Image 1 (cartoon, one colour):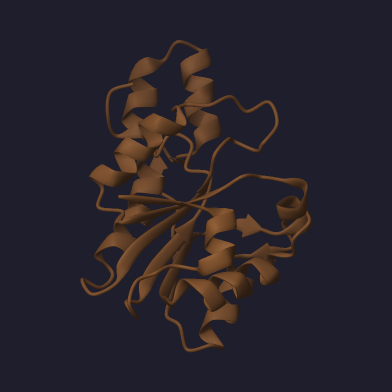
Image 2 (spheres, one colour):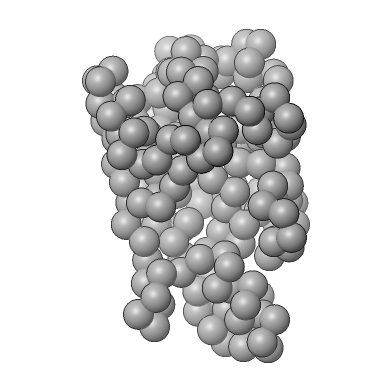
Length: 183
């Protein structure tokens, strides 16, 4: 798996010799079963597309705590078939970027042929761009887009917050069920 830092991507984009990409974006803390469903969709979309995951060096959600180290996350993503990991430092300038600006950069530099997000995904300054707006952005440019529904466990959506709560409560079994692997 090739790892590309955001500044490098801004300078030169993805050198894929005209190969299109299938992309998704998220913190992917834990790479739990919900994340796995989304990433599997991107990886399996088209054998001719390069699967790209955009993620962050650190969990920018204050006080959240990490389920995985960055190295563990990288290893899991590579094992899932991700070809390119685009890594973003959550700097002040990135934090202040509107969601549509972010998507425009991806279109300009990423040769996007397919884009998918989870149904609850939001991005941009003050989370100004939701899944519906992202879908409209890509659809208006002729790029197939998919919103992947949440994966449920015990009647509730799997989330990194639920996994952290299960771990804090000592319920390793529930955490592992939501992760889809041993913790």
